Length: 304
Image (cartoon, rainbow, N blue to C red):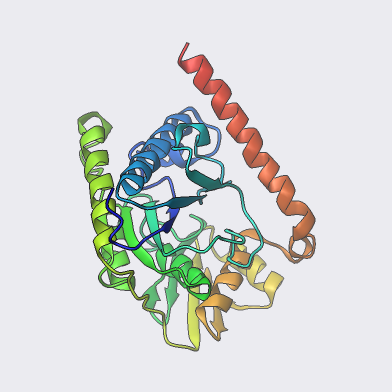
């Protein structure tokens, strides 16, 4: 076992769109037959990387399931030394909650930003057709990596479609990447070969230092385009006291942490929900656990 790289604890943030089993929107949707198989593949991807990292000498792994409800991973199929954080939590890291100290973070199964090319590209939600901060697109890795900086965790590795990988290298120069090219379709895709290469690339990234994260220069001027159009943009803008024109909402933020919180409000909350979030969040997580129970039931039926 080689632990000369010095990484004892690695955080993995896992999404589904860039995993080996998600080939269309239905695969990423909640409680569909295609989602069941996508969750199996996502679990296998994460498991392959986890085993490679443990073999390379990493002592502890924490995985944050960060797709939709936060309940997509079949935890019993992962190595026992892997701790999985499911569901969503208020903070201190938005959505992720309180994290154990980690030496670096790896992003697996990610996607490109809203308003750009790539497979199922979006930022936070497909309701946003475009997000520009100081005139540049905003990929999720930039938000997530920025939210981890205050707890001392910087990015080391990233996997997703080729465009998502390109965006990751722009945000975190020097980050290790491994793309998944889905242009051939699932029938011609060599899943096992790709998974071996993914886990090998993740383990090889341990020979490098975590990357710095490029953050937009403050103050931040953000323009969010709402896919549903002008009426939806007007409703959201009035809800939060923001400026808008046609389908675009405009606002200023002092830094990316405040920007992230504002986007969470726009994408997921109303003032009524925000005031009651402490009580409502456990109900949302219950929905995720029920979805996982349904998924396991379907797997038993499909594998009979």
